[in-house]
Image (cartoon, rainbow, N blue to C red; front, side):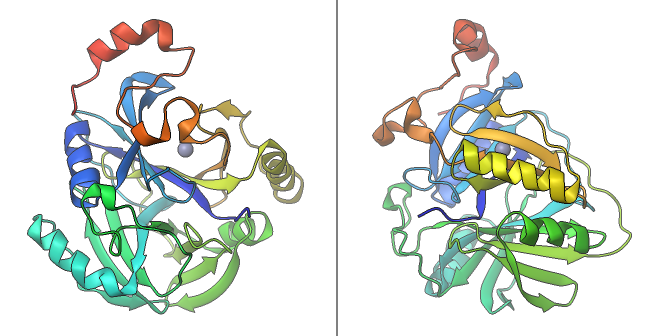
Length: 309
Ligand code: ZN
């Protein structure tokens, strides 16, 4: 059954090797695709997810070896959260400290237990312990016992001047509904267990964000296929006056992009065809994969990329 919700989150990071060490080695995610930025092939594009890289589990990075740090501000994603079972929060608090990752004290937010921490570039992350059971199996291949493993994305928090215009897009087009308010934050949910939580934090006048290491570039929402994506595009245009880009083939999904009224870059990505389109599911993420239009340049691309394990 198709579910509305996040498809993936894409951020900038510092060196690729350090990024791999953290997301595979500490968080136990699976590297489900090692490719390059199709728009800038001198840069890796690393995709992390669950065992099969299903939509709603994906966090991706453009690593730069000499990245300047970004700054979180208005019109940006402030925090990216993963979902774990509520009973696993204690396991994770110990694991993070054992790996030298400091975390904030767990807090109750919208009835869920939230453990905030940062990645080596300062990207704001959180683990959200929830009783909601989507039946997802944890992946034990990343060195975390399956019972504690990250299930996928929980959702993101957007920092906005004013929540109203963004809320209208979430509820009018993207399949979310408002479920609660706490202080400056409004929580929206979709029917998806993975990537089904969006939080809008309205903070009034504040500095705009600046892209750089540790900042999120865009967030992507799911569309089942091209027809469903076209319907979202039609609604955005006819009901909200928003113009989206032409469709771009990202090899593992097909995407359109637009800047929502609060300033955050949104993408609508198809579930199809998925990450097993160009390598076997059992061997995801091991070889450098290039789209057909870059394959003739493989030798020079490989020579320019930093070496990673
Ligand atoms: Zn994307």
